[in-house]
Length: 285
Ligand code: 13P
Image (cartoon, rainbow, N blue to C red; front, side):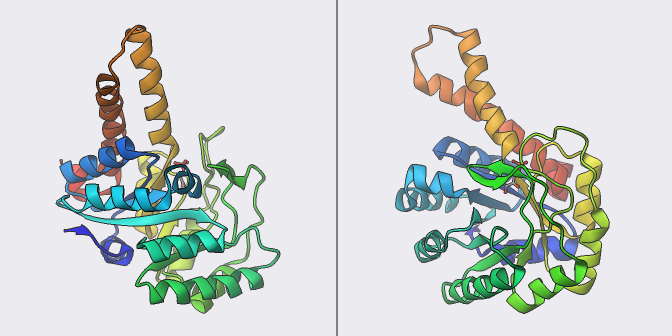
């Protein structure tokens, strides 16, 4: 199975209304853990990286590491670049072999300019055999240095539909009251917006800000067309807290592989919990 195109994964998920976990990984440990989690549950997987992660590891070593872990896996896996406003970074990742990119033009001065640039990104991605996620509204919350805590302007349904149609993006990420990071209050989601968009342009919807949503919210949104479900903060917290817990238990421990094994188990368990919520075979497992 191993590495396949993003739309090979998402077309099936969208048609059959299940969700595919798109996990933001930060290093080899988190990459291996999410691939093992999805493999154990026989679920397809999207591995995604923020621009910050690409810069911290380096594009070539990161891509080589992805291929090395993904190729032997018994499940379909795609590599996706999360929120990227930087066209040069988009080009570099497409040239390196990423399966898809999220061109984040939500900061641009107008939707028209976002459309113009997204069209260019779609053309570039097609030449590379890759796919594109698009967005017109910033998702609330700063993730790896990108985004804003301010509530974004929400555009009309017509504007959103026109953006998807005229750019030809493969996946669309609307703002529906979701937010990156830890929800400070119970999120009030405009789930109808997902149904309204999908009714007019049947493209898989990406649900950003997955951390902290309830199983019922996931079920409802996936049934409406959110085939790609982004999870970052939950994994980061599992990773960070595992380090803290390990050193609380073993303050003088000096063996990194023992620490890494402990952290990996926590990240793997968190990934499995999420996959099991989104994917039917994962649910049955
Ligand atoms: P969380 O950090 O809330 O899980 O959101 C992830 C995300 O949407 C990545 O783009």
